[in-house]
Length: 399
Ligand SMILES: *[C@@H]1O[C@H](CO)[C@@H](O)[C@H](O)[C@H]1NC(C)=O
Ligand SMILES: *[C@@H]1O[C@H](CO)[C@@H](O)[C@H](O)[C@H]1NC(C)=O
Ligand SMILES: *[C@@H]1O[C@H](CO)[C@@H](O)[C@H](O)[C@H]1NC(C)=O
Image 1 (cartoon, rainbow, N blue to C red):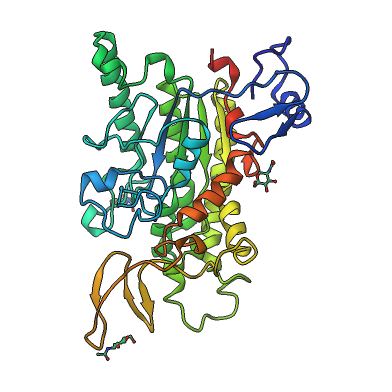
Image 2 (cartoon, rainbow, N blue to C red):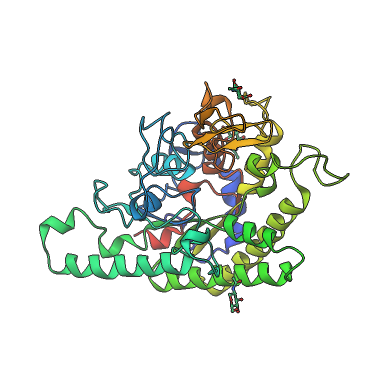
């Protein structure tokens, strides 16, 4: 929603949106949104990206914090493991590129380059919104969303102090104070919360837990708003019931267990319930945070659409995974060595053509799939309101 050049600053949002729908026609090339009637809606020109999430958008946090990633992760684009759970770029990388901003460095990576001038990434693999009663070694995460936003707070306050001291050396490495309101805050988290709910189905009230999770998400959005965040690009959670790793252990499913494309119904139903609650809470946040622009992005539908149309879109079946050994009930995960029952040692290597696969390692998507998805997200086809990412800010925040 933007209204820089509109003569009437008090047009209501609904009118603006329908005006936008009428006047915008999206050009296929990067960043350019062609405006048919004058230059009313200039692109946002974001100063920075601050990202929060899990392995779907971790660009090096877990690799810096614990153990570096191993081959063949990163083989397609970076030609080495670079702390991303894919063979190449993630959706957040394509988004950064589309916005004309550099790839995001992980906040805790002290030797990654490392400029934070145009943003920082707080996302960490295996992160959850809600704190789990587990340590890292039990599959838990130290980097829950509340810790990620606390890290953002520390990042902002410490770099602001350095900026105020006027040291040139720091000025080129960190955002300026005025950049925060002009930044886009992207969020993609929830998948591991759903995984935890799936584990406890029947042992806890899933509905209540999901409600609690989205409440905690909203608390962190409000916290970031209090720290000056104004544009939020919020991804919902993907179809966890379609992840090949969980599908591989299913044999002779009872009728109705799988949907028509072979995904686990009850798992996707939990993801959908989370998404519906997330959407409702985003809508209520819009009323509470009137200076903010909150875009809800339907990653679930984007990913599900890709998986449903795998063949048509040039991919092998969405249930296949590229990396790792998974045959005859024997599993060696991507990048690991293992021994088969008959004694043969085996490496969980990658397939011949990762770009023909949707799933990289059974949980994470290939670069090709990420690109397919990102191409459709950025032009607004999965957003509510249906704004392209280049136009997702409120222009009043950008001056
Ligand atoms: C963790 O354990 C505490 C105390 O038993 C409980 O109140 C809390 O709900 C648990 N949290 C989760 C996410 O299971
Ligand atoms: C063990 O099983 C694998 C996979 O079926 C096969 O390729 C390999 O030749 C077998 N090795 C031996 C020693 O039988
Ligand atoms: C967005 O881009 C995709 C892929 O290029 C295209 O199929 C879709 O129609 C576009 N949607 C809009 C709203 O422009």
